[in-house]
Length: 154
View (tube, helix red, strand yellow):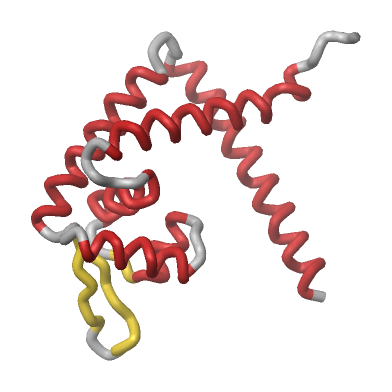
């Protein structure tokens, strides 16, 4: 059997590390009564402050029905509020409550600590190159996704 080349293993390794990162983050936020998806939503709202449901779903790359269920759960926990938008009674802005803002800050701190641990021993130059590789792959996947959507829609 011939040795595997980087092109043969890169995506597999990327998938493995992504799953491990998600699992570790999920375990840490569960201690605070959150799921991975709820924690990501709160961190995004903490960073961007106010978004409507559609913008939030696009940022998180999830479907609208999933977003609605996610927001329902966060609202029941008292972490977010849905506010009406002037001039569009169907649109709702999503904002963190004071309780949610405090927890979002904790979650952001957890994420920062994990990033620091994950990237230990990785230099800025290596990280810059790796980031560019990921961005190129992401663009390629995006092009493929748009192509397949156009093909299925014809």
